[in-house]
Image (tube, rainbow, N blue to C red; front, side, top):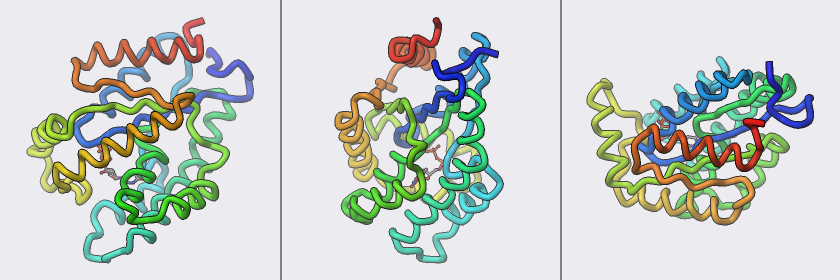
Length: 221
Ligand code: TYD
């Protein structure tokens, strides 16, 4: 099995971020397949969730409107779920030299919980330091799409579900604010973050992501 990082003890941690209907999950799958075909050991996971303990918290977070949690408590729960995910799955996979692909990670907390100062940025940074450091992603792909296009896509998918989760019921304006917040992070951390135009056919996007990954890591050797 090929090692991801140059250091044999360390793998490669890649997160995917974006709004509703940006096609993150499809791209995670496509990249996993390409990397596996090249002989890499890949772990695919998502947030909130990824481990039994974190999935239990996911259930609470996505379906517990009745609890009326404060934005800060919500952020703490996302951070708690993330810590379990790191300890039980991400850190061991990286230590084994694997490539970890995660559908949403810390940038989602910065954007969703931080929007409009709901939770002050310094508190979120503190939580991130406690729960995440030093396991920040090496690379993050931000799948960027106009809120209207993304929500139309998510709407189509939603018909198949019994009930949309609470975070997906948000309106267009909030989606557009989140989009801008993601772009702001990406521009602030250009070493880690890549903005990907997600309003293109999935196969083209997948090629773009692979090319950027190769450019950054020389992963194809
Ligand atoms: P999910 O059904 O996985 O949505 P998506 O397909 O859009 O990723 O639900 C995850 C929801 O949780 C999503 O609306 C974003 C929200 N979320 C946060 O608010 N903060 C976080 O830290 C994370 C990871 C997700």
